Image (cartoon, rainbow, N blue to C red):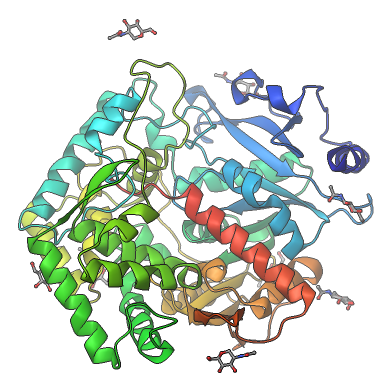
Length: 559
Ligand SMILES: *[C@@H]1O[C@H](CO)[C@@H](O)[C@H](O)[C@H]1NC(C)=O
Ligand SMILES: *[C@@H]1O[C@H](CO)[C@@H](O)[C@H](O)[C@H]1NC(C)=O
Ligand SMILES: *[C@@H]1O[C@H](CO)[C@@H](O)[C@H](O)[C@H]1NC(C)=O
Ligand SMILES: *[C@@H]1O[C@H](CO)[C@@H](O)[C@H](O)[C@H]1NC(C)=O
Ligand SMILES: *[C@@H]1O[C@H](CO)[C@@H](O)[C@H](O)[C@H]1NC(C)=O
Ligand SMILES: *[C@@H]1O[C@H](CO)[C@@H](O)[C@H](O)[C@H]1NC(C)=O
Ligand SMILES: *[C@@H]1O[C@H](CO)[C@@H](O)[C@H](O)[C@H]1NC(C)=O
Ligand SMILES: *[C@@H]1O[C@H](CO)[C@@H](O)[C@H](O)[C@H]1NC(C)=O
């Protein structure tokens, strides 16, 4: 069995940290593991190894108690002398489970980076299998009643109705109050990015290494940049990919993150016009006509939402659902533009089922008084981390409306991302000693590799450029493509640089621009633009697998 040979080698490699317990995979449960301040590995998830690491809730005050961090590694497969230590990964969110991420994509990451690293996924404090886990609701039923079906997977549009901003403000106040009321154990205020950065250093040190090796996408870029700002002399290899501006993040104001969003919409429209009706179902001869058709759909659905009943479930496709669907496709356009086009074309013909079915979830069911811990808590962890990180937002409803109005001048999708600031206006748990900058460092111990796309819907190229500048010596690698992170813009050129960086510490020449390999509206004669050899094909498949996982583990949105 592959697992046996892999783990046998590993025992030799990591004598330092291994005390491999004997427990069959099938019996694996996080709740059966004992948290310790060493790494004690237990087989888990067919071929992976899991451990619970004790860390202080508050690094400045041991009396605050401990947290335990759920860690899963996809073990290195190499000789002892080739072994390169742990490579930590983060899928974004915040609130995405790094354990789920490595379970899905550990093998694919090793394909890209190399087999000499332990690929280490961890649930950031407060998230998923790490404890204490952030809960604002006491049961699944309570949570489901707060977030109606589908509404826990989308951002409610601030343009859905005239009182949408006020409604979201009110919901934010309630969530903020719940967090205070349900914080008897006094832990939620510690669930912030600065502490997760400290945890990453602790994990690295527990492996017996001094410097961080890391690849973070999306919010994972905030985590990586924060680490680099706090511990500039602890950088081994750090890749930040799909980069959010730190200043924007730590002030709960993502306006600057939306400057490229509408470029992606334009790329969809222009690409659809050029692709022809076979490759793009929403085709019209000119971009102007496609734009008009799309606007007609928006107007019509605003005033007449579309009811859908399938054999599985039922629901309403309204402006919120439609706008989210389009925005989602911008994240991984190569995977989703064709589906988006088909869904829009069907919608224009009065059929909302195509769009509805893509994200369909069965009606909510639960054992309504279960004591089983809630696992996928992106929804609550995201709020605790994002709002707890930020300068307290004291805006009134009128100020939030003005904020949204001003953000709308930047992007027509501000109705979705504007939610962060609106919801954070109710958040009350802010530590005075939280990270407040500086948002850079003059002298990092190894240059960062910063990856940015020319049209990233939520992390514009200017943010990546600013981050590279904030850590002198770091290099910006540009991918000339729409999509969020290098996983949303599959490019063997970029994946090749990523590999070189981890393998040899080599950075691309400043100004390097990579092209994507795929085409946005593939024709039946193939999905790739150029002839690819087997290795590049393998890299692209690995990138796609990781991208799907990134989407899956961060799927739940702000309330
Ligand atoms: C480990 O690497 C060897 C080749 O070096 C390969 O044959 C084997 O399948 C690998 N094991 C796993 C679990 O990937
Ligand atoms: C926290 O963990 C440390 C290290 O494992 C341990 O020494 C300490 O007693 C723990 N503190 C509490 C409050 O459990
Ligand atoms: C949010 O950020 C934008 C762009 O950086 C800025 O123009 C605006 O004044 C900020 N709004 C608030 C409320 O901080
Ligand atoms: C829910 O379960 C807990 C313990 O499992 C029990 O104490 C409580 O009474 C139950 N509540 C209801 C409404 O059944
Ligand atoms: C908001 O909705 C109105 C219609 O209700 C529409 O005219 C307007 O363009 C929308 N604004 C944005 C930014 O989407
Ligand atoms: C920058 O950091 C490196 C490695 O940590 C160190 O060798 C060097 O002296 C530092 N340079 C300055 C100007 O601080
Ligand atoms: C790393 O450097 C070695 C020696 O210069 C070279 O042979 C190898 O191709 C490089 N590996 C990568 C992934 O760039
Ligand atoms: C694939 O189709 C496109 C557009 O129809 C055409 O331009 C291209 O030459 C075709 N490629 C191959 C390899 O047949």
